[in-house]
Length: 104
Length: 153
Image: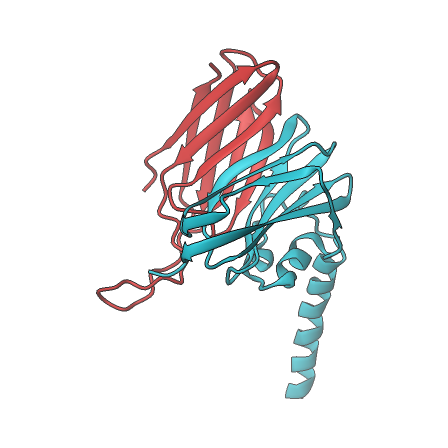
């Protein structure tokens, strides 16, 4: 399931914009499987951590109401070309993924 | 005797709820623990479970960018921009959802007042953004019309 995260980070005028795209089904636990009529168990990302050069910039706590293959964007002050940006997530089944990228 | 144990159990859970409600367990202190109660709560209880209060101040300094009419409720892009200083968190609530709390972003010291993501919205209703800054809560809302719900099959 953990196919990775796509990250784009760009810095402009002292502010860095980070965009991340994760690959995840984000099942709410309310939907039913059309063929079997059984509910698809909830499976969604609960926590996303973003680090800039090892310092936490943002922590997102998500519920099942975030769309599948979640997209996330945020900005922070500072950051220079070549700095590392690390995004990691953990879901309710304990699966996780981490991806590191550089600011462009 | 059974009644007594029952009462005791009730008191214990009540105490935890009060602790959460009183804001003793703020999101910052329980970062590692996902606020299950807040994400499962319905209506205003979600806000109460997350922040310990439902008292917010409407603010013009919060801008929510979301479509007026969302054709597909499963993917509603929402951006929140705010100029309020010393922000602690930005939370998104879709008031028509079974559990309104969609996402909560805890921002670090260097983070700007901006987050953007995509959420599911069950039916036409308000999308609320709550910004917590300097211990105070500010809110803004936007109506989003949904033609196809985002929580069904």
